[in-house]
Length: 300
Image (tube, rainbow, N blue to C red; front, side):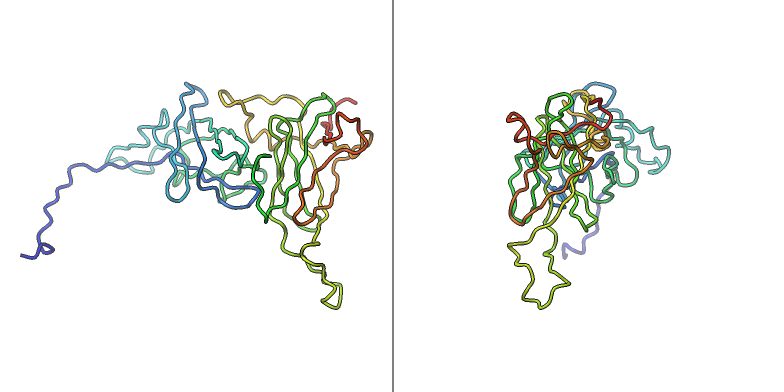
C-alpha cells in the first residue's frame, strides 16, 4: 500500500498555547532603519527583585520576552480559556538595552506588559512617537561613521554648574526641511547627532543646468537647539541610567555662541563628507573644545 494513502492515526494528547507578553522592535534613529541584531535586552519588575529576564531575538529582529515574573498564567493559558477574556492588570518592568558593538547609547525605560494585541511594544517614550518603527536608539560618539551619514558633534558643558552636561539633548534640523534629528549626550557630555544626508539639492532658480552645484560641494544650513534640565536626573534602579522618557522630555536650554552671548538656538554649515563640530567661540582655553549650555531657568 502506498504510504501516502495510509490513515493518519495521530492522537492529540495535549495542546499548549503560549502568548508573548512583550516584544520590542528597535529603530536606529540616526540611519533611519531597523536594528536587528547585536543587542542585549533585559527586563525585571519595577517593584521586585532585579533578577533580569533576557529577551530572545526572533528571525524578524524582534526581541521577545518570555517568563516575565508575575505573567506566567497569562502567558500559558489553560486550553478552554477565552484568549481575549479577563486580561490581567498590566505590570511595569524596567527594560535596559545595550549594544554589543557600541554603536548606540545604552538606554533604559519603564514598559508595561502584557502589551495589547500581538504583544509588540509601541515606542511610547519618544517625542514625537515613532509609531510602527519601534523603540529608538541613539548614536553613541564611538559609532563608526558610514559615508551616507552626516555627523554633528559637540562636547556639551553645563556652564552654570561647571560640569559636563550628561544626558543633554541636541536637536538638529536642516533649514528648509521638516525633519529633526536627535542626539543624546553620554555620561561625559559627548554627543554625536547622525542622520542621512538630504537628497542632493540642485538649484531650481539657476539656469543653465551647467551652473548646478557639484555633488562634492553640497552644503546645508542647519539649526541646533539644546534641551537640558541642569540637575542630576534620577536613575532607574540597577541601570545606572535615567528613564529615556525623562531624557527626551527635558526643557530648552541656552547655547553660548561666545563666552558672553547665548541664544535658544544656533546655526551652522554642514558640508557633504565633513563632520561638523560645534564649539563656543572666544572661551578660555579650558573650554575651547566645548559647547557651553545652560538651563533656561538657571540663575545667572
